[in-house]
Length: 443
Image (cartoon, rainbow, N blue to C red; front, top):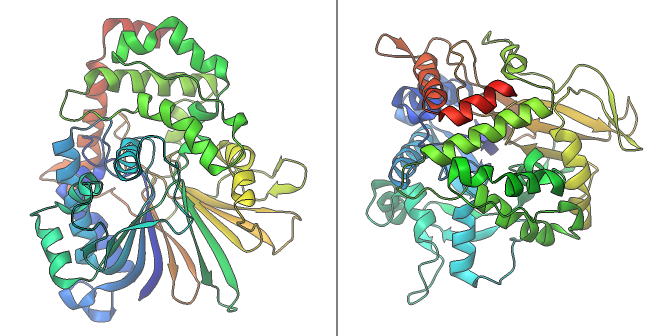
């Protein structure tokens, strides 16, 4: 089979709680891809590779905030190698998330300077063109960190293969990537991919909430970090303005760990997520309700129709308010950038919830926005939990797919892979300070 697009998000490579930080997790991903898209009887042989025009990495791929550089690089290289052994990939498009946003900031500042523009064009910008670095000899090393993280530059086996075969393009896009694909009726459909950083709960929360961390000094107490709280997304006039506003806040909260221990920042990030759950009325119990049956895990994003705005209706929805935040804080800037709402498919990650749905002006209208969330690959401390390990794909004929990868039976030796990752998540809580535990108990 040939795919026009294959998209994956929130792998959090290098983090111990990610299923894809285990070799067995990568093996299960490889098997699921080959089983679904592989070629005929040889789908599991070297000749059974399927074709992918564009692989879209939807952010939080390496977790540079909670994993050391060495861990993130090692596991990201293994991830890319796994995907390249499963499929012939022509182009990789990387969209940074919040946990790897500093990769983008470093790239942008090295290439254009600290006061340069903050976003790319909708088609992204080329870093590697047919296996050759786009920068000329004598240019600053603005591509080195990215190429090292994904391909093992300058001496890694993946990078050497890319240079030798000259068969891969690598593109970075921020805050979104857009392209047109013809559907089964030969009509153009616009596909827009974004991580979701720009309409996260913490990024879009009122200034008073962010100020709370400054005034209470919780960032200093738990993370030994200084959060830049001046982040008011309502002041943004366009996508470039939005990225400029949120960047200092995102880079300060999910700063790169380099090779320093991440325990303190890990604790603070965990506290923020608990606060989010409590303030939104949700808890881990809400996420345990996901059916872990391998055949019934692709959820519609909801239970009942919910009105959003004055004209659009969220036809297949749930209480995942990220859709409402997208509608309020991101979609208007997409429209202003010239992206249409007719024949539009929007694909994002960030929340780890997974699922799909559509927005329509009329309940029976065929003119709708299709929305897909690719979920995530990170375990909670509950061993019975199963992450929404989804991949989004568009076939050559315009058919759209959501592939869910099941880890119910995946083992590491005699142990369950999910249970091992859950133990690592539990260790995060056990290693939390007594002060943090006291606050968690109170809330």
